[in-house]
Length: 343
Ligand code: WQD
Figure: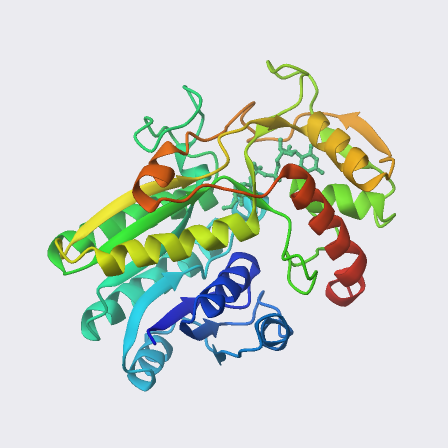
């Protein structure tokens, strides 16, 4: 049974990917600084899958920690690297914290891949890399313009570092650019860590619906879109998790090459507006949402959604879960876990 190292194991996408990995029969080793990772994740993953994984409580920004994990876990077949800060707004306020954390952790992982001869690597990237979009839907070779946040730039720099590194070391890599992951595992035992004042759309809707916020604020209704609100590509987190398995198994099966880096969009290919998301939530849950229209949010592009045909062609993967399934799972998660995550 192949052993897979997952960094950021107790985070949102990492924990859901571990559920998929264990379900596919892989052995999983996790590492997480637990600064933002949730300590209930290992136990709940075991509840869902019947299998556990060992999680190293370690910050990968310390090369000694990274080496310790690779030394202890000798025969790692592949690494899936999620560990990073990911809040766009926070990155604007704390740029050095984002550059330091996201880039140094990656550099240390790349050093260990070389030192311990791990040849298969999956990197968690983001549609934020594209910057202000000039053409829609966004393809992997769409011209990348200036990113709109330090967060987006950490992902852009990371991609360049990986590609430069893979060019001189034996490393096969898929860089997966997520659009807007949302929703949670059907058990409502795992989900996006719930914040007191959520910044992302879906948790902001569910927190307003649950009465944790007085109302949901629509950030701008005067954009050049079909209803004036911003358009995004929301993809169920379990579809994102399954895409990582497909990418990893593609690397395992690709014995012809020993070094390449390829970028793949993970999105549904459908653009949905903020107002349409509100309607989808209300229709799916039967819950009327109290919302108001407010000013635009700095840094928001009017519309961004993916062309996901490359994922289907290369990974033989396409998203299968509906917007309704996504909304319902997010609502269940809010009701089940807000009191745990928000102290
Ligand atoms: C979506 C739309 C908001 C909250 C995200 C992540 C980023 C990266 C890319 C992972 C925008 C509007 C939101 C609210 C609103 N993901 N909105 N009221 O900005 O596309 O970026 O995906 O790498 O980390 O932040 O997603 O959910 O923040 O916003 O109107 O209370 O919803 O203005 O138009 P975004 P989001």
